[in-house]
Structures are given as structure tokens and as C-alpha cells.
Length: 403
Image (cartoon, rainbow, N blue to C red; front, side, top):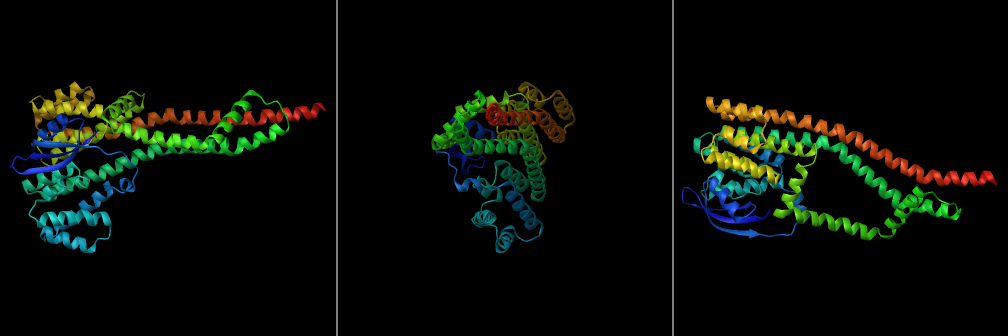
């Protein structure tokens, strides 16, 4: 999905510039319209994907949480915001936080509001962050907005940690299998093959296949490494294109169990973001538009953007969710009741809690399949290794016995 540099007119007739990812210029204009902006000019930015060090040192959720906590201290201290930020800069040592507070301080010094400065630095402050701050500034409840952001960021960090913790086991197993295979094929089997060839033993078929594979890997190791490096760059480039990302996201959703897990992880983030934005005071149109942007899967995002368009057109939220065929009947029933009682943000928060519970349960179901499958794969690898080594050894011992 390409990036676009854009210039747009805000509701107060000021000119706003920024950078945004969108499937096309039409999709960009539609997204900006939902945010109350009128597109003037857009320019696509094309850049080859790289593994530069800066990509690994981006502004993380933990950094943003620490920054939000410091902003809360400044806001609750009673001192002017600009003066408090300068005090924070004087005692701060972390480079990324210094850069963020310098940007905020310089922006406030030039007469911009806090949310305007944040909108001008999207690489630091996500869209939902600046919009919640803007709602707090407009309503005079900046302290509550920062509280909402603290709770949301803490949830997001813990949510990511729990997902990574569940996936750590299969990743370690796969890495161990890969490392073991590389050592056997490049070191162990070639050496053993030389010994068996010197004994002039007729080797069984499994041994011939394994040793032939080991000879091929050892003879073409540079080409194989270059192939994997090229494949990694090619895959990264393909995922940066609209068609490639669409194909991958559709394929991963069709996988058994894994597709369901990906869907629930994205829906959990969507409903949590939506509930936070609604509770912070954003209007329904902006809240639904921004919440859809946190969804990583292109197909799911497209369906949830349909909810945004339907709600903007005056359709009931429950009916829009039902049309996506993504949300369970229980959540839809909760939203129907909330629309009648006027407690939509509370229903969305409870929906987020439901998905938070469903994600670990789905991961456990995935592991119920992955764990025995990984054990079977390890067992098969061990069986092949044993057969390829001990069958020729048995033949050698048999020949000695006959003599």
C-alpha cells in the first residue's frame, strides 16, 4: 500500500499537510473526507523497502506510553504546558523522547495547539492519539484524554506481549529445526559420507538421498543463501504493493485456525480503539474512521470501512456490523441494546473485552494442533537421521560378521 503526501483544507479553513497510507488516491480522499478534511493535492511516495537500522528504532508503544505519562505529570502540575515541557527536556536522557518533546515545545512556541503539533508528526503520534488530544483540548478535559491514552497504550502493550508469548514456542521450535538441519547438511553428513565411501559399503536409499542433499547444499551454499536473502527482499517488496498485500491478507484469512486468530486479533484492536475514541468524546464519524485504520489486514479493513460509510450515511451501527459478517451475534445484540439505551461506548468496551478473552482461547486451539504437529516433525527428522546413519553402519557390521 503506497504512502501519500497530501495537502487538505481543515474545517477552520486552515491548510493541513501530512502523510497517509492508502490503497489509491480515491481511497485517500475518502479517508480525509471522513476526518472532515477536503483534499487539495496528493503525491504518491515510492520507496524501496529496506532493513535500515532506523526501522528497528522507531517510536514504540513503550516510548509513547512514557511520553504520555510525562505529559500527564506536566498537565497535572499546574505549570504552563510549554514551561513544563522545557523542564522535562532538561531532565530527560532518552534520545527519542527528547526529539518528541522538542517537537512539541517548538510547535507550542510557534502558537500551534498540542494536537496540531502531534498531527504534524505522524511518525511519533498515531492518528488516534492526536484526535483524542484534540477532543480533550476542545472540551477542556485534556487530563481525561491523557488518562484514556494511558489505559489504551497499557492495554496495547500487554496485548502484544501476550500474543508474542504464545507464538514464542513454535518460533523457537522452527528455528531449532532449521539450525539443526543446516548443521547436519553442511557439516555432519558430508564428513560421514566420506567415511562410508572409504569403506565401500552399499548405502541404502534413505542414506543416498540425505547424502546427495547434503552434497548439493554444501556445493551451492552461497547460491542458497543469496536465494533466501533475495526471497526476503522480494517478499517485503511484494507486501508493500497493493496487489501483493491483498493477496497475502486474503490467503492468511483462509488458513484454518490461523485465519480465525488473525481476524479476532484485529477485531480486538478495532473495538478497543473504537471504545477509547468514543469514551474520549470523538464524534461517531471520526471514531469509526480512525478505528478502522488500526486494522492491519486489508480485507478486514475494507469491511470495517464499510461500517464507517454506513454509519456516516445514517445507518444503524448494529445493522452495519451485521452486514460485515465479522461480528458475532452476541456483540451485535449488545450494540442493538446500547443504541436504544444510548450507551454505545460501554457496549463497544464490553465487545472489546469479549474479543480479548476469545484471542487467548483461539491461540490455545491453534497450539493444540501446532504442538503435536511440531513433535511429529521433529520425530520424522530424527527418524530420517537415524535411518541414514545406522543403516549403513549395520551393513558394515554385517559384512564384518560374514568374513
